[in-house]
Length: 503
Image (cartoon, rainbow, N blue to C red; front, side, top):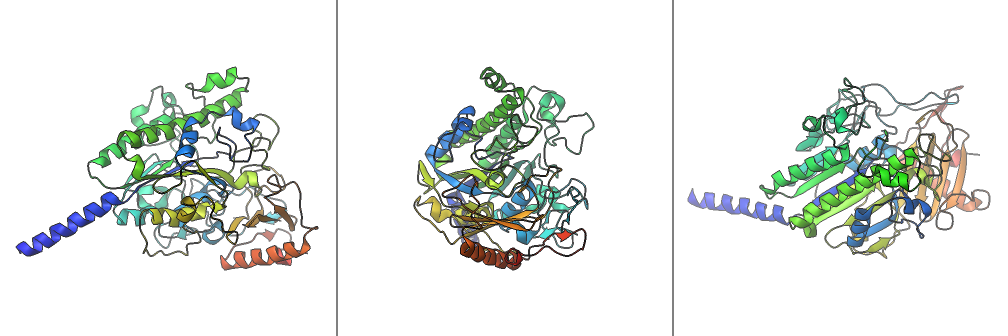
């Protein structure tokens, strides 16, 4: 008996030591932050838009690690969040549009020409048998099984109310702060109880009652709660996975009084001053978390992955001409062009080359296997096919390139009631420097070389027929491989053609 107790004690001690050696991991996800919404330039030049913003902690993170200038998410939020949590490409998980708070309620705006295909409008699910969901093994579940304290803080938006994944605790998070089925906050203001109206329980942010009636901004409250939870976990010595998923910088553009006035004094409109203040408040949160890590000697064994869930919002509720907010990128949130899918991304942590830049194109699909790779979780089983790739090797070598890698976007839905070519109703693929855009409504293909034309101003479809044909064939193969669902014509009920069938 004594020998057995000694063996069990040694095994427990060994597990404890292994857990201590595992790195901590933070995914810092920002909502609707554009590629240009920062003082960190992600293009070859610093632009006037970059100069408008003040993000010193993003600059600090860039110095501590690697900047990815070709990082991508999906055009809108829920598809990105499901891809991150499952490693599946959007065409495969079929949560192709944002999910409603109400179960069984698709969010597609009506269209005169097309009908969306059947898609998983209830989001993701950790259990089988939930209609219109994708059943998959979630990332936090695997990390928790590997000994991690898993903490969700902020926006969830994985699934509709009435389904399990509306609550992050159901997908493997040990603690959930303020995560629900809601896709944006009712209000960012503590004095309004984070509600636009007193009885708004659907969109009002939950779990933050201690801040009700107080002069505090939502971004700050979430950060304080996340740090408090990490301090509690320090007693256990367990490695932690923090999914810091801010509601900022999504609408509504409430005034963060800590930063607002200086932007107004710089000559920005009220709207843009509010937006810039939202961005700086988000950046302060990043800095507060970095300060916590450094103060507690955790920074050298912690990865931070900073990314946005889609391109920046660039429609009428912003000041200035529509789609001018993400220049030189074309369009914005909801679009298959670069302004809708290219996002800021920074990574720091063990073995990440400091103050470095990688031009390798990577996707939100890659986060799932990458985080598991960081955690040392090599052998794992998932219900789903994982499309993403472990990109840790790129963190360790800024010059490493893979031009055969394929990125795929699929949006057979109508996001909103605007009608811009390239917004909604489309699919796109990138391989190397080449990008093919398939516009569903008029069944046309556009071909761009992003190395020479980041703004997608020069369509090469006619000038490069051989390349167009090769890309269209590959694109079709990839869509079929992932069982992508295509929209249908209202008039006939027939499915639109695949890219290689377009005449």
